[in-house]
Picture 1 (cartoon, rainbow, N blue to C red):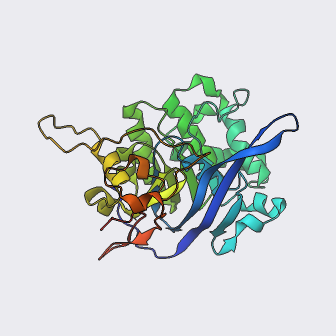
Picture 2 (picture 1 turned 45 degrees about the horizontal axis):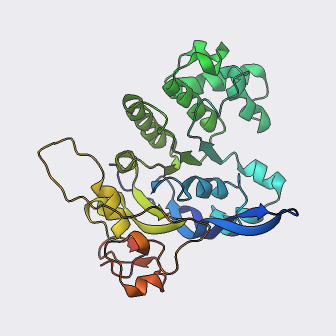
Length: 331
């Protein structure tokens, strides 16, 4: 488990972020419904820490990450980077700011241009942001990136299809690091890789974080990976944050019934150790027609009548450390 970050400086703040996708139909393509992929999400990320973001597929994790970087424009809400509201920045200024905010995508093959060599892939962000005045200077920086990410220098003339999945993800990491960012959204960066390769990539990212002082938003659905790399964890359900706490606190004492169900499903290496399994009934509700009250109440094993009508707010429960949960009965 990653060490808790000691720096209290807030690098990124998300406030009441909402992203709604319209559904159009009919002859005139009018909006007939909408999908609220992200629903009133707020949190802070301190400089140098890793905030893990977990939840089932379709809960809005990746959409949230892309909205933070404005790869998708949020419907409403604010994103503050070093105190500046970036949701109001013009396109030109946002383009300059991208030097400080990068993303590593889930599929390393789909996110690399198959017609470009590694040198071209890594040189592109350098050229866009005016880093290096000559090809020699840029190539020197490319060699530094390859060394940082554990790739051989002769790789610069090869194409993405000539590498394994783990090597391709290292290229994606090198590309994200090319412009010396402060903040990186890691959008399920190891989910497409073999388990043994996952460990190598996660360890590489931790080493790079310590060496370069990076700050991560680490999006994943594998709770063991998140436990290993994160200093804090936020659990999402149907577009909302259900629980947020320090990683150690959340894994040892989960407050929200959904979090307890997720943690109970983690397989243990000891076959003789038995733990109580929390089985959720039903399927995840449609984000087009979310439930009234608490979004989780149709599947919750402890739901009461008021859960069907009253929507719980994310509230503080921790006695010694911050621990927030959106549940009427969390203690």
